[in-house]
Image (tube, rainbow over all chains, first blue to last red; front, side, top):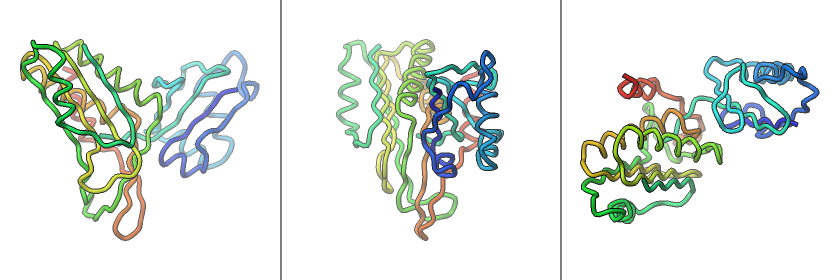
Length: 86
Length: 153
């Protein structure tokens, strides 16, 4: 299982903070952030807008990641808008 | 180098943090501290409260990593970073960055470096509650991104 987390505006727009994806939903052997995004984007327009927004950030296991980074069972993948702390 | 990172709802005592930073070594000749406060207005609107959300775990990791980069650029004795989360009110303290070094130049630069990267890399998000009751997420600012260029040359 891959644990997917959303934060801030995205968490509110989806009404979901944590979502679990079974690894077999993703093409085995080619499991990347991009394939995970494609699976999630199929869930609806809001999902697609969030996942493919130009400034959406992604982290895999709490390190910044890009579309080509590999995801595997047990990973935690987060999607979030640009940060505004400080 | 002594490093302390705290992310919590608790307020902090700047004086106590200064003592902590300056007492690590008798070589310490400079302590620079930055305190960020909540303003009562933003983009022309009165703001009553602000709610700070973060990504527990990743937030601390990113801050430690930023401090580590600062430590490689300047000779530092101690760094403390405190960031509050939860509901805050105007004039509340939000963030603290304190740096101690032998000389002021290193301490000033490292403090600004850490603050600039914290603003653009640490996963915190602010939501404002305006006086008219509307809630809105604060947008990231290009000026904060631009501030990084001076460290990248």
